[in-house]
Amino acid sequence: MTTKQATGVRPLDGITVLSLEHAIAAPFCTRQLADLGARVIKVERPGVGDFARNYDERVKGMASHFVWTNRSKESLTLDLKSPQAKEVLARLLPQVDVLVQNLAPGAAARLGLSYDALHEQYPSLVVCDISGYGGGGPYEHKKAYDLLIQSESGFVSVTGSANEPAKAGCSIADIAAGMYAYSHILSALLQRGKTGKGSHIDLTMLESMVEWMGFPLYYAYDGAPPPVRAGAAHASIYPYGPFLAGNGKTIMLGLQNEREWKVFCEQVLEKPALATDARFSSNTLRTANRDALRDLIIQSFAAYDDEQIIERLEQAGIANARVNDMKAVWDHPQLKARGRWSQMGSPVGTLPALLPPGVNNSYDFRMDAVPALGEHSAAILDELGYDEDTVSQWQSAGIV
Image 1: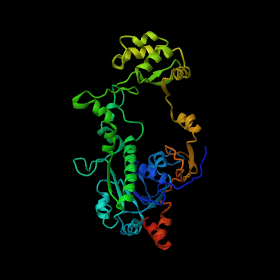
Image 2 (image 1 turned 180 degrees about the vertical axis):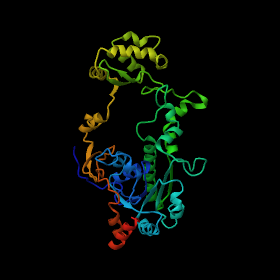
Image 3 (image 1 turned 135 degrees about the horizontal axis):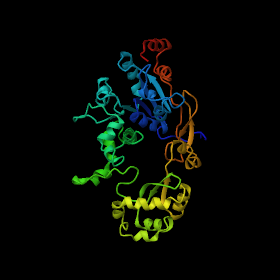
Image 4 (image 1 turned 90 degrees about the vertical axis):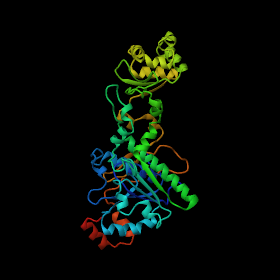
């Protein structure tokens, strides 16, 4: 594991982001901004903080979700409903380029922090509101969590086994919303560079996930049946999915075309006649007769362990993958070979951290510490001109 010293100017150096955030979607968005050099000031409730801090204690007592989404940020505790908070924000906002919030629907507006309330005074400010369903419509005030959006977007209906639907094993609705918010903010900053004006981004989890559902939506166009739930297999391509080796381990296969099917039959299964079998001579037929074909493949694989089968697949140029557990991902040889693991600080000591995807040869990503609750409150308030006695009094009163 190595830590590279950052070099070069990062794209968002000099940009300040104020985030009224909790859970995953907004924190995931703003962590991407921090990775690119932005100063992210995370506002948290005094004494409690972002409730994601308490999801679990798996990382030396810290929550896994929080560690993942909050490095390189500054934690400012502030009771947003207090009169003092309004004064603090009035001093802070002139220095802010981007305001991100995923509070409960309507909460930011009630606090005077909507785009409409701020735009006239801060015309260059970019405001990004992240919500489950967005303003207007019958779902405007409906609570929205990752599982619920996976369900409302149709994702759960096409995921899982034939007998039981399933959600994704990670927070994909939050991730989708966070990444679209991130890209919209970058676009808004580029636009501001041309016009000098900020803009309002209204980003919803539902719309982000429905965008990802494009394939099953069009597959079921005009009342056609939706894709069947096929577990880890593909609903409309076969063989494409999990197959057991002789030692009981699972291998993922991915055949995409007729040329690969022919090579697979000849070089991997060593059954060349199967390539022209009337039951399997096209992808449509293979999909329709998948049960019979699966039995034939598993029979052939039964004579070999997973490593032997993978070797045969590699030699034949057939796409494949191991089904890695989390330990195997931590130890993945490709990630190690590419030096993708770095380190970051935290209240519980140094932790490993995956570098953000993608490599730019002109700068290194920022990989600073995960903040303790309120760790930067005193320093930020000092920057804003508050003396130690005032800060101390506010801390005692639970204002910060």
